Each structure stands twice: as C-alpha cells, then as structure tokens.
Image 1 (spheres, rainbow, N blue to C red):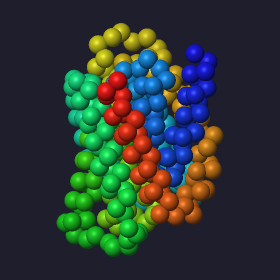
Image 2 (image 1 turned 60 degrees about the vertical axis):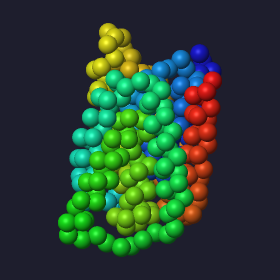
Image 3 (image 1 turned 120 degrees about the horizontal axis):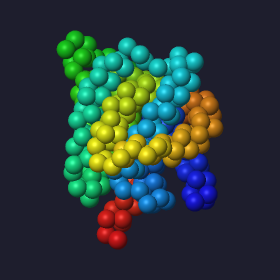
Image 4 (image 1 turned 30 degrees about the horizontal axis):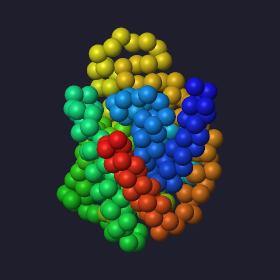
Length: 260
C-alpha cells in the first residue's frame, strides 16, 4: 500500500507537468493511472481526478496570475457554459455503463490528439460581434460535457481551441484554461459526490477519494513553480507534439484494457 502512495505522489508530478505546460487538469494521467494502480472503478477514477484538478488548477491559476498571463475577460464566457454542461455530463456518467464511458474517453482523446497535431501556428486574429460571444460559449459547452464524462477537466479542448481560434496567445492559453477548469471540475464533481448509493465514510465522499486526491495534489504542488516558469518560453511546436503523442499513447493503453 505504501508503494501505491509513492506511485500516486510521483503521478502528481506528471499531473502538474501537463497542467502547467498544456493547460490540462491532469486527468489524462490520473484516470488511467488510478484504474491501473488501485482497485478503482472508472467512476471512482473520474471523480477523484476531478477533485484533484480543482486543487491543481486553483494553485496553478494563482501562480500564473502573479505573472499576469490569465485572460480573465473571457473566463466567464467559457466557464459558465462549461460548468453547466459538466454538471449534466457528470450526472449522465453515473448512470451509463462503464465500458461506454471508457470508449467515449478513448474516442475523445484520439480526436483531441489529431486536433492538437493540426495546430500550425499561433494566430492573432480577433473575433468580433456575435461570433465573438458565441465562440467561447461553444468551447465551454463542449469542454464541460467532456470533462463531466471523462474526468480530464476539459482543459485539452479549451487550450487547443483558444489557440486555434485566436482567443488567446500561446503563452496565455494554458493559464486561462486552468482558471476555467476550477469552475468546470467543481460542478462536474457534484453528481459523483451524491450519486454513489453508498454511505459516506470519510475520506471517501460518494465516488470521490479525498485522500488520494490530496496525495496527487501534493505531488503536483512540488513541480508547479517550475512548470509555470517553463510555460513562458515553451515553443508551440513542442507543446502540441508532446501533448498529442501523450494522448495517442493513452488511447492505445486504454484500448488494450478493453480487450483484456
């Protein structure tokens, strides 16, 4: 059991790495790792991942704000629909078959990996008028639904689409995505806390394992300051290449699990 906690702590390093450099909440690592290391159901992995992301994203946002790279003017436009759809998706996830959730997760990662590889350059195009308001709303709704269904936090979508659409610059995408994920993951985690059908036995609340979430956050806390500094000068080419490759590898691993 001690070895499991050590592995979870190290996993926290990876969570912080992809959160500060790629704008994801770390669910890409947390969800498959918890299912492999511990006797967790997919719902337990998703819900514990969401709570971990709330803590990680909140601390990352604080650190990024010290450097003035969070674009707060677009956060509410994305966070509101994201939170609403995350709440709905979280409720659906508690009643759908587990294998369906895993397949949905794999398909989402594969699509996102291809979308990430397709980013060719940072754009400075500015949206205007009605299109400017609908674009963040659409990004938020889609990312929130995926966050509630998969436990990844939705940052992969917001980071990628904010870059592609020109809503943020390269250096601003990850910080802004972290701020949005605080709200998204909070609302996505609510159904998992109240729909497990089992009595509360702290530190387990519904499907959420608060002790595991704390260990993951502790591991990520150590790396966050380094990640924030690296983000300032991290090239877009390497950002999309590493992130896309990581997602494809996880797709392969999860697909293999389905046929065991």
